[in-house]
Image 1 (tube, one colour):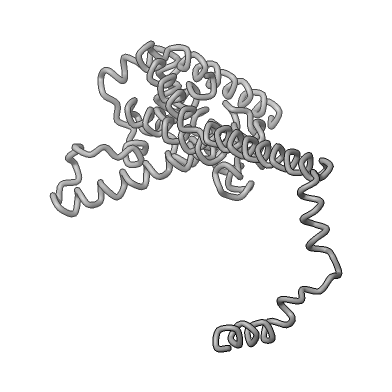
Image 2: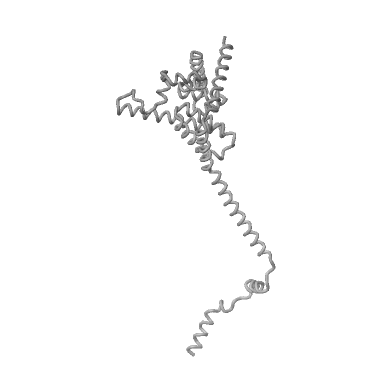
Length: 167
Length: 116
């Protein structure tokens, strides 16, 4: 149960939407159960996170595509009818309610983790929170170990700057 | 300087992880229930059930074949009854079948009887 709850949090930090996060976690669990149930139990957790991360990246790609089409059709880049978390992640503007939430250390941390790029967030959550080593993280993220180190280092650098500034 | 930086990073990472753990604890009851439901749904769709049904079918078939082999073997090993022995002896005898071998002669004889 612990893994699913943490997975849900990871997905929610990436999508910023509870229902999307639940859909992603459910999809990942369904795929794990239907395709990998025959695998040894110790492989389930890394497999689950690999599926989960693929789903999250699919979500970002889909959101970006939808956003591009929206801009192309409406010609209005400011309208935020379709939410694009990738674009949002680069924005440092905060709503008043978000500013109020930042008094809480948990909300503050979540807020800055949401501002990381998707790959930096994945690398940080898998390495720091899930305690996976570089090789495992690279396998889950489907990239080189060097890329994992770079993403992780940038994530830590960003969080250090933001959290120290906002204490 | 670098050690200080590493210590500072470790502390930062530890604080962030604590906050993340706390955020997991704050997941509300409704969302928790939905996560449990999603897990149960995933488990229900697991092919393990299919595998167990398939395993049962294979076992049942293998057992049936095993039983059939035992029954056939038992019957083959039983002593033959008199009628069966006579039939086999008749089949295995070296005597020639005259009727079969001289079929043309008996056909001619029958025709002669009719015409003659």
